[in-house]
Length: 314
Image (cartoon, rainbow, N blue to C red; front, side):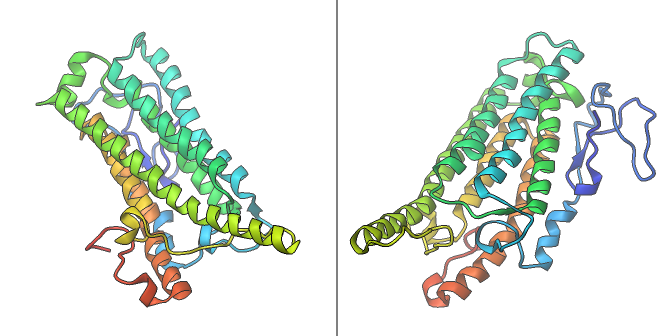
């Protein structure tokens, strides 16, 4: 099972002892790692496809989705493109640990895997089910999101199972998080859970906008005897929490959340680092174009001095 995703700009594991090649790069064996402490994990590559978003205002989901025969219904698309991530991580964790001969993974590995599953239990399952409505997702966006989830699940799951130098003993974890292993792991957990809670809070503020509109439409339909209208394309400027300062705080706090995961895994955990970098590369262009969308729809006066995603920066 190779883990070299050069074409999508994600990440690849360092060379293992294998002789399988393509014309442009080496394909690496997932189960035959080279134990090289100087080469701690996957190499982060430039996320080329995500960067294409800087060149276009089109993004085939959410606010900028348009009618297309290639559209997939929002909830179905979301669940089917997000769920494979944590399912792949769990499968890879189990299968790679068995092939590596690791009978009992340390509690740190299990906690980190659980954090990943907790996040995606919300993001992949509860989030689309709680949403009053979801815009359709273009098949191209769905395919790229699915590819990222599969690659991310394989690489993180493999590292947590001991592939590529991932720690699988208490002594290895002490070295991974030196000089203060307990403090760094605890701090990482705290940052992760703070980001997760803030993510849910700001997501719910967005849901509340459509819940209020849905209640209004239901009242109008009841009073006037009209069919209930749709809230799929209803938008307004949220005001609660960090929405007072930025337009996409739910993106910002998700980056913070996965930075906490990266901290808990250790600064040499390249799959976790690649995850954070790829999230920023994929989401940052959408915040910049999204701010332009908000200004066009609501006007500069209503958007005010809000930043796109990072206060004082962008």
